[in-house]
Length: 410
Image 1 (cartoon, one colour):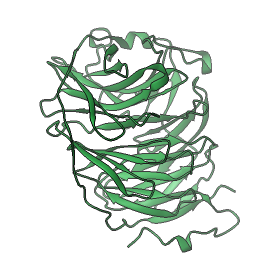
Image 2 (spheres, rainbow, N blue to C red; image 1 turned 60 degrees about the vertical axis):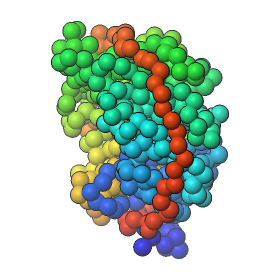
Image 3 (cartoon, rainbow, N blue to C red; image 1 turned 90 degrees about the vertical axis):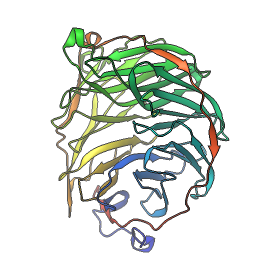
Image 4 (tube, one colour; image 1 turned 30 degrees about the horizontal axis):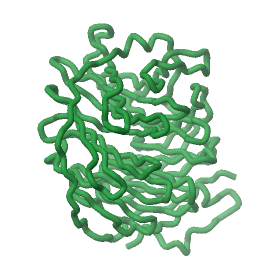
């Protein structure tokens, strides 16, 4: 059955407004949410679980659901025309129209991936994917707007994987982030390429010989105002800082709250911080494994905060030009939750199976010692031969079940 008929999505009282909403207990219960994206033109929202991606209207009405093209969906992206792109772990890249029709689908012969791939789309329509191949080499490749292969690059001679990618065409930069595993450590990595695939610079995080940390793992990469932002988790249950870099790889300061060369994060569960940056004003929407979220200015001053409970953990976020925030949460064996939240975080209360409060248990603060946690890396990054082959994914399946709930914001 559909998630819910659009005829019953209506205001139910003076304190309820369907402009802000949550889809709760999204089936199936055994798979988490992997992404949430808002179309800045129409206000439509796309949320993805491993097996499906659904589109809802600006007011929360379900419009359609599509299955993962091949295997599990790990990454989603939108272009300026509202077309949706997904990438599965096999690796299959699929482009959908705003109505959910498949425009093209391409299978790329990485022979599967040991790392869930990430995807982004440039204003030109070029598509970039970050992943790993079956030989545990980190890989980033570029497709043109028709899905044909343009180039591919890999980290050689060390077990590694890319998971996140962002492109800033006016700066001639692609940023791919992931990990590499030299003997005895797992290092976070950020690599900057130009649009032709030539490596410009690369950073490593953790720097075990300085910090004693032997595990660093990427949780996101994005950009604003010609600067790249990247987040990492240090240690299995450690901190989750965000770094800011110029086009040329210079560590840049967060000036809010006293300044500092980094944004030092904390969370009591796994230290994950997933984030997205508003391209309107640079506001950073973050979400954490505890179900907390916070929004900051680009300089690091807090704007709003909240937490979804119980048992919900944040997996991804987005923010629209009006400052509204979007989150995808997962509760083990109880489905997922997708929510649209007002810029000031209002709408707290109890909504049956979950509670939304204004007390975030995770967050960030500026720090002046971040330079000790990063260093230049020099992994061998070489061209690799990949092909992009047309494939025919399955059609639209039955919509998953879930419960629609307006968030009380008046």
